[in-house]
Length: 511
Image: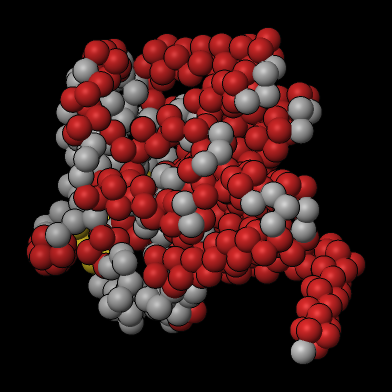
């Protein structure tokens, strides 16, 4: 009996060793396959979503117009922002967007933005894999962490909600921390600078990485200068650079506009007042954050990693961004179905790897058990909360353009590129490479052309998180009433009525 148990145990060890040897032998092939599948899968979905008329003038069209205008010699100028700004830098300071201008010189399309966003997130998984492989001493466990990262719904939902710098920055943040951990100062500096240039609040991640270098790595001088320079840059951008581009003298997300109230007005009416209230009334601010939606958001952040992201230093690096999200009065910033939290995710994975490594070092059973638990939790989270076909709510058909959607190029040929256009929100990114474009019903009395569509691209699947009314960004009854008024208008004539598209031309237009 004892001999039989020993034999079975020996055979089990041999099987595990054989699997480990196989994984090490095929490591590069498996790793490359995961990256390629992820890039292809989400590029296909993001392109399909755009071609299916499910992207928005705000935000994909906003980025498209800002970069296209830069190529035309009008750096980052806008006409279509919900924040009523004339330059993108008054809303967000993101000089990294200039890197897309050469690609637009080759061929102007917002699909550049969608592709490189997917590419950055995919590459952002590599440092997590490397850190897991080094600390857990197992190719198999490292692959589990990479698979879990690729299954994370916060990343899926960021990738499939147009384009945003905080999603593009996922790869930059991941590599910056990895090279900080490896004490490769030069490469850390490269990625830290790129991260800081991605959006005005992301230097706070670099600031926290400086503190990490001081407190966790005992690199006092290096960490001090990283923190001082990044914090100084953050304050300089907020108090001096962004106000130069803003008509209100405040960053656009701080100032109230007629159609988009400030996310932080409950804290104060200016950047200085907001900071004073946070520093001088921390208990009041802290207690104000205890709402179900915020607590639920925090639970969902740590659930894919079975809470192990709470027990190591890297998670602390994300605290300033968590605070910015939670302090917002707009619930989309602390909602899993939006994009704001994507750049936080790599730090949670680094923390989980280091936690497992420290807590269960030497115990292969517990390392395998909890890594498997993390993978199962990630699969469940993707099924429940992803907006990709991995979820029960979606299928590939949701990302395939219909016959009506495919006619958008024909409609585009009917509108002169120099004409001003008021356009339905979900049609906007297909027309945003022009000087004057507005989200309907804005400028509906002034624009030379108005383009609407009675075709509902969301009708085929009522379980989708975002439906047609969300895509319209207006009440559906008001939208229908506006269509009827335009048809009866003496000012506009209906010049195209086909496949659900309605194109109106201002009779006084000379174009």
